[in-house]
Length: 270
Image (tube, rainbow, N blue to C red; front, side, top):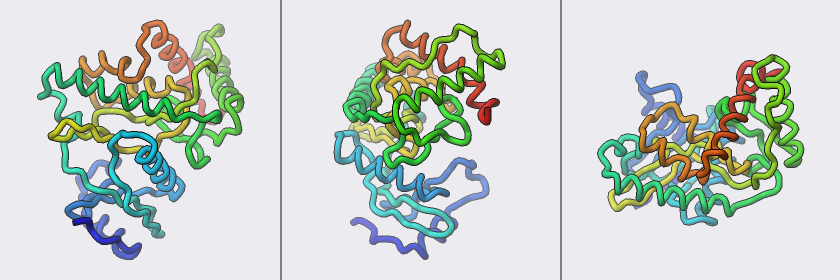
């Protein structure tokens, strides 16, 4: 039986009561009833963005995601109230899986990415038009955008490349931003800790807070940038899952990411 709605007055106290001093700084999801979790967002815009992403994925794809039940606003933050899925994350299950199971999972995830690539838009950015946030591999710590057009988006990246070149952190002949890729919906953090493996083999995808419409190669960059999980088989399967199959394509993507990275991290204000 589904839990009744939570009031804005009670939910922050429930979340606070479940926090522990030993919790890692990045933990924001807390179980507030037997069948419900609450995800805390500092920014209301960030919460609304993830809620919209979940709603779109739930209605326009067959990718299993947690059901969104409420968006609760409070002076202490905004909370997404979602169903609790009592399954194991893929990062903890991976080491016990057979090779066949790993290949089956990769096939399923590749299908998920294919579905996301059918969701397209001409202007890169978030679904609700707020700035784009991600790790330093693709945006600065201050975010980026919103962008008015693909040309605007491209100009932002070319400026970052120019900064890296000017500071001698990239070759002078480093290629400019590749505009040949379509703008597709991208998870932006498709890593094993954000995937639940159910007993029946269903794969649930969590954490859609960074997702948005970006060039298709962004999915590959964020997957290879994950520092929390290392596995030879996962590394081998990542290009196939993210549809970055050809070695020459992956090489160009990695080189471009490497060339702009200094400007995104150290030279973010330049």
